Every structure is written in C-alpha cells, then in structure tokens.
Amino acid sequence: METLIHLADFFRTSLDCLTGHTAPPESALSPEEARLLAEYRRLSDSQRRCVRSGVRTFLE
Image (cartoon, rainbow, N blue to C red; front, top):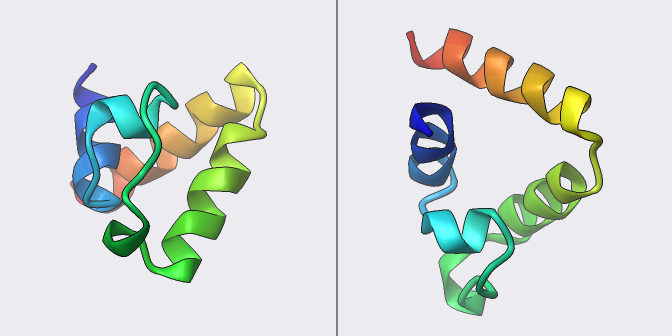
C-alpha cells in the first residue's frame, strides 16, 4: 500500500486513478505522465513489482 501511495504522489493522482478505478482528470496529467501511466497499466504483475521497487529506490 505504501508503494501505491508513493506512486500516486509521484504522478500527482489518487490511488483510485492509479489503479484504474477512476479516469484521471485530463488537466491533472501531462502528456508524458499519461503515457507513463498507460504503459504501467500494460505491465504484468511482476513487471509492476520491479517498477515499484525502482520507484522506492529513487524515493529513498
């Protein structure tokens, strides 16, 4: 859960938006952020774990 919170903070969005439960407000995401989020959503669970691990490393 902590990692999801960090990702939501990083992308400046809500957990609901990050997990696909709500659509991101168009004005809230830059084109690059929207592209990164779309790419993240296409990853497998194991690939997402790797991304989250990398984000945690950057945030430490």
